[in-house]
Image (cartoon, rainbow, N blue to C red; front, side, top):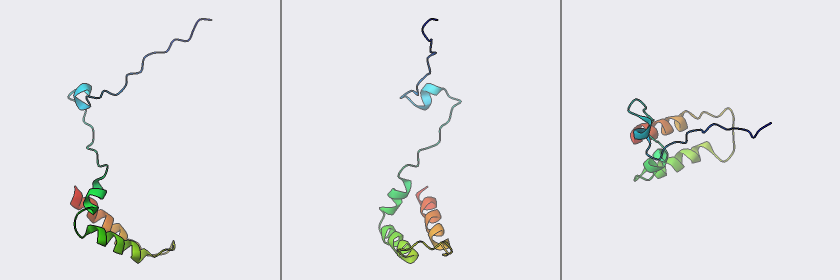
Length: 79
């Protein structure tokens, strides 16, 4: 039996979308989007206020709607 033959697997190009051709669209990176928003004046304090409202103990029946609202607002304003 001869040596195993492996077919070459194309690696992603550092050129990004241009190397893939005009028909390929990749989503815009959102890495750090929330963190950027938190860096704006006042937003960090609101973040810590929301965390303080949750308390230091996990309570499965706790109402977290204000935390969800805070996060959705942050992502919406950052977009």
